[in-house]
Length: 326
Image (cartoon, rainbow, N blue to C red; front, side):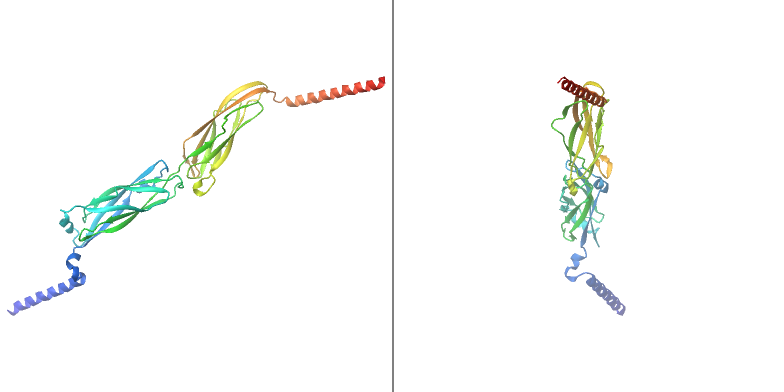
């Protein structure tokens, strides 16, 4: 009997010790709820290659794949979800809470239904980004995403944030203003000049490469080979004027020459000329008409001077004879 009493006493003491330990670990007022509590964890990841590949502003959008990894952690994180198998999945809401002023962004879809588990569940969403024309090329943009998870009884929800960085690309875009009259008639010894006003509508400092296509034989055609133009995205002047100079053949004889002059203009990124835009083609017409006497001008001047001298001498002799007769 004494032995039985000792066993009961030892068992009672062990229960008291165990109870004391549980009382320390678990608040008495919510002991049953707390021991089964599980915390929600959400991991936000995105495709960095897709985000870092530059894309053009204005007419293009970028789609960045985003993955949402949702799981729970707790003492009984594997057992607790079993009690929710008969319930609907948990609601998870996604919002964009911060973005650059020069872009628009949206998430598709912007909410998810996911079942909580210790092993986790992954869903995919797409971040759609479009940038304005006034963004400077290759400026880093950051979009902040917020994910909100509702409570599911002992599974506690929460708010989680993630950041996604991306690069807007270089937009090679020009506005060309040429004279209203692109046809000029000149003499063989004259030159034709066409002013070309260029406005850089792109989003970075730009090199404009100029090239004359198929210069006619005997004609001299010149234009600046390269012109650097600023951009309003960093406060530079986006305007520049270049001139096309055309001189027709001027060999001796009568001329009635008419040629079509084509000029190619190509914009490229100042810091990396390999990033080039489309080619712009401009067309000008020059007609040279008249008589040309190259190299004979000096001869004509000498002949003229001799003629003047002869006439002056004859006039003087006549004046002298008239005086003698008197």
